[in-house]
Each structure stands twice: as C-alpha cells, then as structure tokens.
Length: 487
Image (cartoon, rainbow, N blue to C red; front, side, top):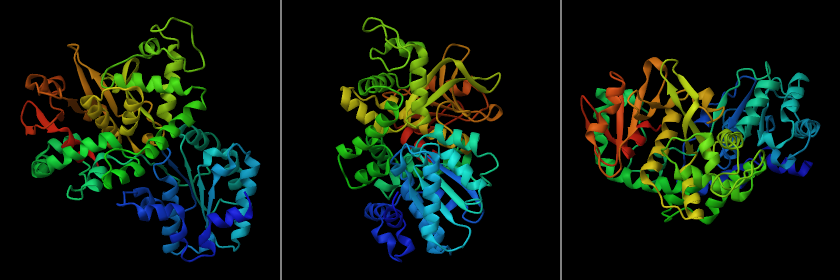
C-alpha cells in the first residue's frame, strides 16, 4: 500500500472537512433514512483492546468504522491518533506485509500521542492477519491502542482471536453486524410505525406486553404492508434504502451485491455457481420442513465439490458430509441459520437428529426464487423471518458473533405424540415457545399445542392477522410479533 493510498484513506489527518468527501459517509448522508448502528456508540474508546466487528458483506461495517473515527475525533482524539487501513488491498499478502503497512501508517501519522485508534477493515483479506496483530502487540506497536477489526468470515475471525490472540485483546468485545431487522425496516419505510419493543415471548404474553400489542393494533395494517416489503427486500442497508425510496423491488445492483458476496465465499470452498444455486433452491423448497444431511445430499443433483459419489440424476451426487460442510460454511458466513431439534432432558441441541435450515436474509429468497422460477411460500418465509428474529433475541451476544451454525438458545422440538413445535427459545428452565399457524386459516385446536406440550411456559402462535390472548393459546399476527421482538 503506497503512502499516497494511506494518506487518501486517512483524510482527517489533513482535512478538517474530511467527512463530506469520504465515500462511505457521503453515501450514508445520501440515504433516505439513517439506520441503527448501536456498535458505533457502544464501542469502548478509552481502554487498550482488540475489538472485532463481524458480519456478512455489505451490512455497513466499513461505514461503521468511519463513524467510529468520526466519534473518536468528536470526543477528543487528535486527527493523527486515528489510523484506518482498507486491508482488501492486501488480499493474499503475508503477515510481514501487514506489519510493515501498520508501521508505515503510524510513521506517516506522526506524533507520539497514545492511545491510537487503529481501524483494520476486512482484516481477513490479509493473509495471516492473526500473526501480524500478535507481533504488533508483542512488539509494543499497538499494545496501548484501541484496535478495531472487521471481517466477513466468522470462521477466520473466531479462529484468529482464539488461537493467536490469547491475552492480547484486553477488554476487547465481539460485535455482530447483521442486516437490519424487521422493526428497523418497518420504521424506516413507514415512520408512522414506532420503533420495535425488543421484548421476549414471556414479556409479550405478560400483562404489560399484551397491553402494548393491543395498543399497537392501530399500526397492524401498516406493519403487514411493511412485512410484505421486508420479505421482498430484506435488511441490507442498500436494499432498505431502495425500499424507503419506494422501489417496487430490489434493483439488479442490490441483488448482485448479495449474490456476489455469497458466490465469492462458496467458491473459496470449490463450489460452482450451478451447485450453489441448486443448494439454495433445495433449501428454499424446504423452508419450515425438517431435513437430514443425508436427505439433502440425496436430493442434490449437482456436485458441490469435495467428496462426492457418482449416481444417476435425481439420486444425488454428493455425500452427507460434503453437503453439511457447505451449509455450515454458509452459516459461518451468515448466509444460513441451522436450527437443531431440542433435547429437553439435557436442554441442548440433538445434532444427530433432523434439523431446519433457514436463509440468512429475505433477499436471498427473492434472488433464488427469481433465478430458478420458484413460487414464493409466504408462510415458510415468515417462519424464516421469525427464526432470524428469535435468534437475535435469545442467542447470547458472544455466541451470535461466532456463527449461525448451531444456536444454543433456539431449537425445534418434537413432541411425545409425534408433533412438532416450530421454536423453543431460551435456557432449559426458562424455555419459551413459538409456533407458526397455517397461513390461510388458524386451527384453534392446533393453536393450543404449544401450551399443552409445555404447560406453564410462555407461548405464542404467529398468525396471518388474528390477535387474541387467552388461557389456552395466544394468537399474534406475524408482523406484530416480529415488530415486538425487534429492537
């Protein structure tokens, strides 16, 4: 990275009005609405540490780093105390190159003020970044500084933090930056819809939660319209901006951003474009249905790569381990959510049993359906949206930042009578329950199943439009439930 590039990426060193020329902040200022970014305000800028911002590509992590720089300058950091490096320019380079780049940036910044704020964008692009950060810390280059790393691979980031940075992160935190949730989307596209409540299922069915939802009924038609749009656009900031602007659907450019991000990751594992599309099609056809790795492998008629076996079309050309590895790789990169069945005797996941697999953002549904000519399944897509919302609400923050491959606090449950509860959430002794009703017509007898299966535990059945609280079932429209969970 040349000196000219380093200076250009750190305009605040010489330009007091740098923010107006910064491409990330300029695009942010042109957006029709400002979306929540709590990690920008929450990050500790006082104590030396290595913080990590993880999340899929194009969710705004680079913009968050520029906002953190802006915040630091407003809170008293001198301009040359803040150093930003775009490490995708060092893709594939070794640790020594990253070490030299940081040292050169510090030299160019000049001054002896400490701590510095070092912002390493897309750190996983740069070869063995773990070794580089370790050496820089041990050599005293960054051990008094606040270091913030971003990356799109939870696997690389988690392995780097665990294997190479023990004792070198200080009070550093892991932050997960995901696409915007339904509550943020709804409020952005219709400011008349209040911000989400951020409630658990137990709080929703409590007296104050019931009152809050009954009061919010006046917004239900608007929320239902927003949900239809959310299931089309998803939560990427660029997609939300188009929805706010009134676009009828996500543009080709936004679709390409999501698709190219996914393809770039899976091709690193050797999968072809056709195989990735076939896998997404198979997952989308099975939204809300249990499946096994063997079943998924049998249904795939395009080889993913790695270990495969030859067989006739319609009988599968992948083995179960290959399919499992690719789906879990998608989950590690936040493109999928794998929910296992619950073992109530242990309060943990039964990883040997069938599971449900959801896609990481509604925009993936839109792209896949259009590419392969699939008919959309409203109930399945609502269940997918609820899976993502419950994951955000119940999974511990440190676990959320690791991957979406096997949540500890979100499971499916198979009842003793052979039935199935869509979601059980939370720790074993405080389990809470969510079922998704038939979309066209609520079967009230079936709606009593969650409370009968787990008596005394808070339970909600998500409906298309019915709202009713009672002793044997609680019916809440899916849009209202997603809104109440958000925040």
